[in-house]
Length: 277
Image (cartoon, rainbow, N blue to C red; front, side, top):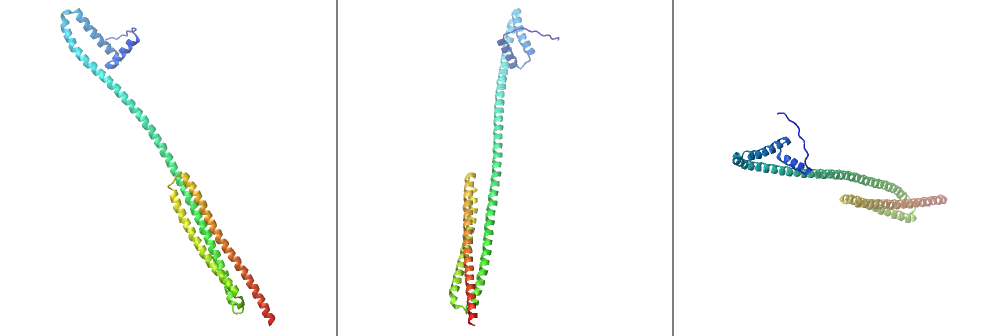
């Protein structure tokens, strides 16, 4: 059958109503117009053929119920379509919100990983600094032990001189007493040095324990306490080192002075002995 186009003007309200009805029916525009035209023809036939009016009315009664069922199905389908569209929109919104949350969590995780990496670097620097301080302390202790050994050798030499001239110069017993006193002082100083070494070891352990405790605190508090602890630790090490070094130096100067006086006294006695001969 050939097809042609027919155009006519209608109101916007009627146009909207027709479009809504066509969309709800699920028919094409042409199919919907054919259905409406058939209904109209049926009404026209009922008027033009009164003998068939009752039959047509009964037929309309049956078709009306069918049409109502179809319309209800169409309306229900339209409502279901709207509900599905609404659910799709909600799911799309939830999906976008979920993507935003995932993006936010991803940024938080990256930031936390970066913070953990910086904290690990910070802890590594703290460990390296502690190891440097420990090496410095061990080096200072090693040098102090060398000084003690050197002073002990000098003292042994001095004691040998005292023993060598003890029989001839008993009047110099006071010098021996002084040397004995210095020896006792040296022993005391050595004990103090050992005590200082033990104190330094205790400080090392306390410093290590403190660093472990500091690792559980916030970065700002941990940094402030680390700097304070490091400063106190360095000051204590420096103080102990300077104290030990100063005492040993003074003792060494005293021994040197006594050694010179003793040598001078021995030289004088030798000159007198040679003069008496």
